[in-house]
Image (cartoon, rainbow, N blue to C red):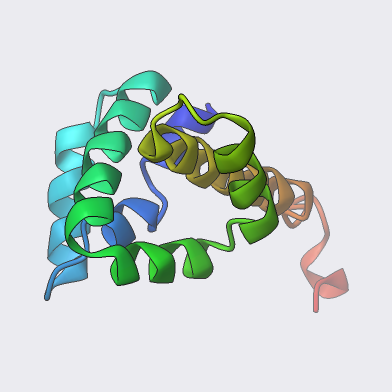
Length: 119
């Protein structure tokens, strides 16, 4: 269920962001339509590696916009020196998006409230 929600989140538009993010998001959602979480992770790793090499500032903006913990990222990069940085970043991006999904679901409106009691 969470893998399904991940495909619908703007993180992929951010990572793939070009001039037309909405068009790119639609294209990416089409490509990723049937992928599982691990496949999504692998796809993110490829694009994050590209950003690390070619547009580091964009990657930093993405991490900021998604609200990935800078302290956690620095800690993981320091404590796991043999691990590909893109893998660590992809895992943190996915983890943060999963947290957002869970939070959103926990505050989801109760549809069983009578209309006269709703605000």
